[in-house]
Image (cartoon, rainbow, N blue to C red; front, side, top):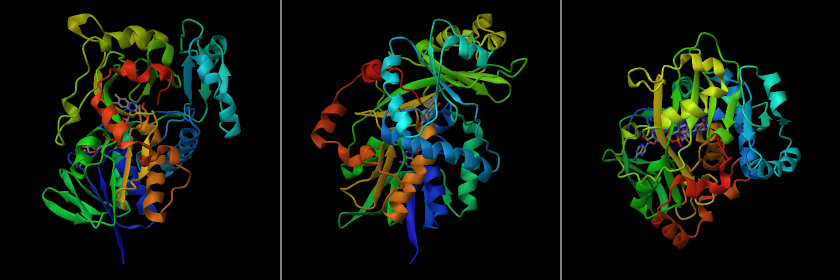
Length: 410
Ligand SMILES: Cc1cc2nc3c(=O)[nH]c(=O)nc-3n(C[C@H](O)[C@H](O)[C@H](O)COP(=O)(O)OP(=O)(O)OC[C@H]3O[C@@H](n4cnc5c(N)ncnc54)[C@H](O)[C@@H]3O)c2cc1C
């Protein structure tokens, strides 16, 4: 008898899960999306990808992502992984914490190069770094354009027989004898053997109907794109931690920059029908991104139109929400309390980079009963319910959350 899976949410996590499940010939797969494909954070992402994370499970999962992004460039029409490398920058204060991870990278066979400012200047003449940052270069890193990746992945899913129902909101789950047996979407029951919840910052609102909580916090985050430049800027994707943000080339001969906002208060999604498009970049941050980040790419400064008629100097501005778990690691895998239910959430600022791996791993859990690698550290069952409740009652700012990990990005 053919099995049926329902995936809630058509962002990169949900689509990737559907795609990889379909490649395993799972059976019938339906993705239920309350808006349009990419309506959540996925269409707002900068799409930067590095394999140089801070935990063994994270590094191994990113290894899957980095090889799948390359393969997906061959599998999906209209998508190409930009393998420009990813340069992770650190200042004297933050480098020792990262330097301690180099033996982990060596043990796991992950490539990297440590560069000083002169070496970075020689490698990327378009990059003008100030101070004495340390560069940790990830030669396999790079970026993907969400504008290209999302439609290509959705088309790839459809070509494999996945049904994507847009404009259809899940309002409840069907639980039968303690087992997850489907969802209620737009008032109609969809019965299923497996339900995968990939609803990002909507997770608490969606799971509250079955009394399931996870320790999660969300914060607004923003990124900007210049007007077209006279010439392409030849830089890798840059996690410019000491300068408070990141940069990468953008299609159309532009540059994209994202900036942190340590003051950002925690954001609580008001209801299931919340739209991420209602979030706008907080005032002043576009200016901060222009002042702190554009000088690192002097040729991008030529597109700087700031000051004229109140122009911020950016042609495109996008804001959305990031979601973090209490211990900073993603929450991914089967939920013990409800056999047949799986979640994928809390990918910090790296859910785009995680997405091929999160799809592969969730598909392994659903179709084969076990993922391709040990994801115990990401388990949804690792949290104590009482501590979760207390954690979710607190209200914090982004800096209060991320102080120990300021240099952890994407
Ligand atoms: C400005 C910005 C820059 C970023 N830059 C990067 C980056 O450079 N690299 C990186 O790796 N990550 C980056 N991220 C993070 C990344 O965007 C997210 O981690 C990732 O997109 C999460 O994907 P998702 O599919 O889990 O969630 P989403 O894309 O948010 O998808 C969840 C979907 O669920 C749907 N949904 C919710 N509730 C329901 C319901 N009840 N019924 C049906 N559907 C529902 C929503 O409409 C939504 O489409 C950035 C994020 C932002 C905001």
